[in-house]
Image 1 (tube, rainbow, N blue to C red):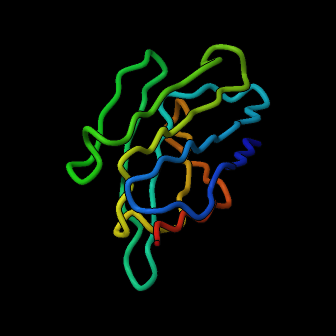
Image 2 (cartoon, rainbow, N blue to C red):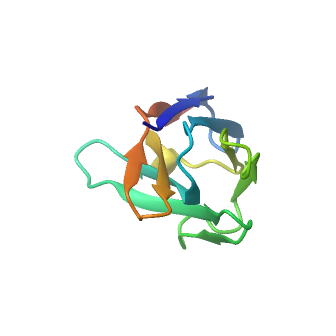
Length: 119
């Protein structure tokens, strides 16, 4: 069973930065990709960024140029992804979730971490 634990959320002023982490305990399950999603109050969960096992990255239009996703230990059963978030805006306020997609395209989710951007 895959377990994902997010950390790094908090309160930051507009224009500030935060770095989120998501540590995976894969228990022998191979990964094809990991993603960050977010869900703001009253809104649907939306995709933010992705990184594949071979470090190909992609971003939503709303965060491209401000957020950076990165991956470590992809081949060691304990992958960790990071989301460096710069130039944060109030509209980035949400609960941020990480997701791991295994080699059979089954999805596993973390419990989420709150990010609040406010002055």
